[in-house]
Length: 88
Image (cartoon, rainbow, N blue to C red; front, side, top):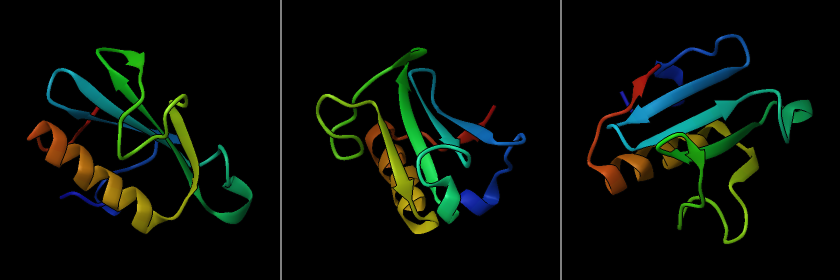
């Protein structure tokens, strides 16, 4: 249940909530779209935020990600929050 393929884009974005504090936005039309890649952004209580181990310091989005890299980020978000992802 923690793979990108378990969720659906609507039509170019999906949002996964990890409890009531964090969410992960995944888009397929951002940085890397011309190569079939994905872009993510992490939100804390609705505001873009940096997430150590997921985004780099000074940046709140990360692009040019493969499906495997997005799957790893979903698992990291689960590990950090202890909450299963739920699509909203």
